[in-house]
Every structure is written in structure tokens, then in C-alpha cells.
Amino acid sequence: MPLRLIFMGTPDFAVPTLLELVAHGHEVVAIYTRAPKPAGRGMKLQPTPVEQEARRLGIPVLTPATLKTPEALAEFRAHNADAAVVVAYGMILPQAILDAPRYGCFNLHASLLPRWRGAAPINRAIMAGDAETGVMVMKMDVGLDTGDVAMAERLAITDLMMAADLHDALAPLGADLMVRAMGGLERGGLQLKKQSEDGVTYAAKIDKAEARIDWKRPAREVLRHIHGLSPFPGAWCELATDGEPARIKILRCELAKGSGAPGEVLDDGLTIACGDGAIRVLELQREGKARMKAADFLRGTLLKAGARFA
Image (cartoon, rainbow, N blue to C red; front, side, top):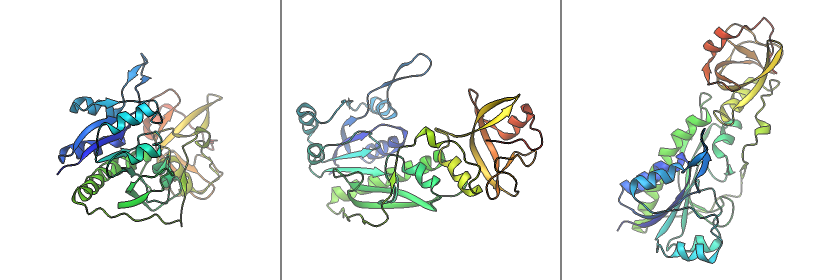
């Protein structure tokens, strides 16, 4: 029989999993997501991507500020769920909530655990220069992404991938994985394996203070730093234009041949020297402007020989 599920998620990344569970016949009886926040020019309350899909599907939506009260627990238990599926929900689940569904709570995490436990696994995998990452389904416990793992899928990371690209590749991969995991749970054949204690790393939330580009680093490290933060918050640097330093986010680049002082512009194709090697900028964004191709930027910006990004 199809499972009776609670779905808990918030951003775009969670939407494919919700849609796949519904498409495969599972009964999603309630959706938990974060409360709407003011956004846009008029600062109107904007429901989360998951809430928008839930409304379209006609599934009841709950946006509690906490799950730690007796009232929240009673409401959660009243759904009489077989399991809860959690995808980037953004709120810690206390033990009583984890224990409430018949089979427990299952999380989709965007890394190959135990590597990159925590808030920003997609960004950190790229920034660290990892050759691969993936998605995993784990049965949740009260630790930070420490639960037993049920299933996993791997995906190669190339130097061309930005965080947005990897996000968009992992979301459907994870949706398919969770559907397969819930199918195994439904049939009574889902096997769990404890995580290794070797190779544990933590994907700390991205701090805007770490977004400034350090041109003294080797070119590949600079590229991975840029792509791991693209499009948000965006790795940035400064360029003196008209005598004033202008902040510029570099969003996409590629490795290039060349050498020079770190940050030096090497040619008219926006090749920039790093501590070892160079990168060529492909897309960028001036502060307060829309993102643009490097060619468009160069048509409107005169860069003299020896110009430096700092």
C-alpha cells in the first residue's frame, strides 16, 4: 500500500521530491514549510516554493515557528503518518517529532555523508575542489546529519559547474532516490547502514565575509571558489574604474593560460592572473547591475594594460 507521509521542506531544491512522491501514489497528508517572508519591491509576504506547490496540489500546509511545544507535537502526531520526508526544511526536529511517525523521519541530504554534514554541502563540495558529490537518504536522529544511511547516488563535479548547476542536477537525482527509498520502506525492504566516523567534514553556512576573491591562490582554487559561490552570494573583487573602486561579482569563469601579478588583467579577453596560472572571466555582475557576459562588460569598460583586480 502507498505510504501515508508528512513532507517537510522549504526551497526549490525540495520541490522535485514532493512532486515525485505524489506522482508515485503516496498519500502526502500534510506539508510543513517555513512561514512566508517579505520579498520583492513591495515587500509582500512570499510563500516558500514548497508552499506554492502544496497549494497547487491542494495539500494542507503548516508553518509552525517551533516544533518543540506539546501543541506542535500533538498536531504532528495527529497526522498518523507512516513516515516523514524531510528535504531542506530549515528547522531542527526534536526527538519526539522524529519518533512520531510509524517508521521515523527520512532526510534527503546533498552530499556523500559523512562528508559535508551541515547547511551548505553543495557550495562546500565545489569550493573544496571535490571530484564528486551526490545525494543520500538517511533515517534522521538528533545529530547533525548523523543518521543511518539507506541509499545514495553519486555525481561527478566538473570545473564548469557552478553551485546553481550542481543544485539543479542533484534535485531531480535526489527526488528519484527518495521515491526509491520510500518504495523500499513500503515493501519492508529498506536497509540502513551506519555512517563511517572517518572522513567527517562540516559544511558551514556560507558567510559573506568569505566571498572576496584571493587572487594569490592557484587558478583552479580561485575558479572553484568563484563557482562554489555562484550565483549567491557571489564571489567578488574590486576594480578601479574612473578612479573609484567598483565591486564586481565574478559568476562564471574557466581556466586559462598565462601568468602575471595576482589580479592583473593579461589580455583583452578578461584573462586574470592568479598566484599560479590564470582564469578567464565568462560572466560577471557589477554592483547594482544585472549579470552580463564578459564581452558585454568589456564593450562598456575600458581596461588599460596592467589593470588590476583586487
